[in-house]
Image (cartoon, one colour):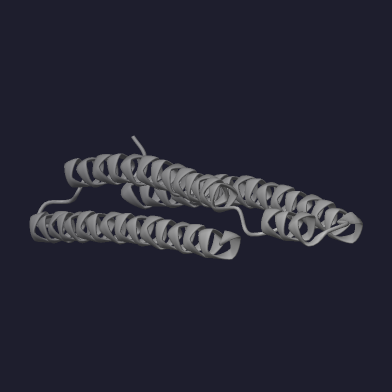
Length: 186
């Protein structure tokens, strides 16, 4: 069986490779999310330009005040479109968060298992009299694990609060647009 320094070196190398894999996964997921958000924004801009062009044509060809007012009313913000845009953007952000969380949790679980195995192997092969050092190492790992769990809970709670705040803000914006739209039609 290999000695403890070789085990630690192998574990460090494996950990580094796993970290690189995690970074690559997170980067790929971030680009996918940004790509979806950009696509959504491009579609929204196209739709807005089409609506503005259509409204401008109708305004320029209106022959009487009623036609002009009807065309102007059609050019008002569409609360349903805004609500759908917000829903889709929220869905993109939620999916990105879920993908990031899954990838990070999988990496942490794998790292925990490897580290626990390494410490166990090291304790089996440790020279006599090193029990205190091994116990200290296990205690440090347990403390780090506990701290990580608390950090993960806090991060999850913060993400949920952010998601709720974004949803509430988008609903309020849609209601404001609806109100403005109704006011503009009167």
